[in-house]
Image (cartoon, rainbow, N blue to C red; front, side, top):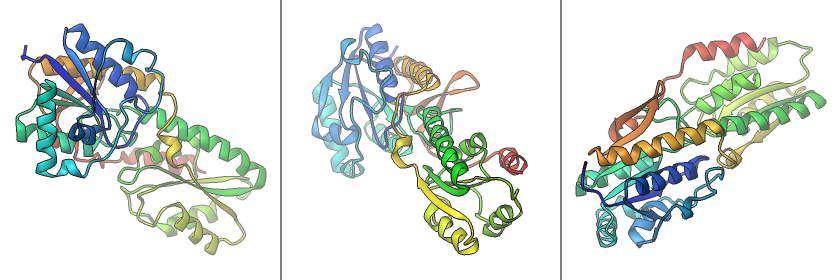
Length: 325
């Protein structure tokens, strides 16, 4: 086993449900192996500012069910500079931290990759992002909760759409990835799904709305925020201009998708990879993301993990067309 005595843990970038469950798993696993654990507040910014706290069993009690992150999170422009990373390294050494567990997404792992190689510092990462866009894991921490939050919201929107014979354009998160839109669109029975991975064909959308069932009292179109036509408001404007007889409304779900109690799946995933992260560090793993593929723990180099998962299963897109009749 590698000579590691003090593990630092931090969350960075956008928050995701299940991050607290991951923190809990890292802390308790480190204590199980008789290691010290130091929490780093506000990610890389806290590392630069020396915002550290000693963590024990009690400090992670009763947090597995909580959304957000008790360690807070932030984005750090300073860490992108050599000077900022040098300050971070000096603070880590001063505190006696000799290994890190980073919980976040591609921005978090990009920073970890550079820092780990620059200072030969042992770092492993846990995939904490609602977008599910990292390579090296079937699902990311927070994705399952986020899509269930969307489904709950769209079901409620469907109720009012049915009552007023309305067409709703619903925007969900996914600036670079349409996986939230794709899965929730299928589960919510959407008439159409617009995602950044595929070219938006407005004529096909108009045709679907024009040729769809005339007796259907509600219609839902799910739009990922990053799709090329400009998002839900632009799509809504185009549809209103084309179909002035439709009672068209736009609903942007926004940051409610990040919040809430994590689902069972996210809590279990976070717990599994949290335990595996500490064990990976002790076995000498560096600069890797810990994920789960086909039910088994996987190890993926940061540079591979952050290459966005842009492959969309065409069979899922076909399901939308078939079931929207």
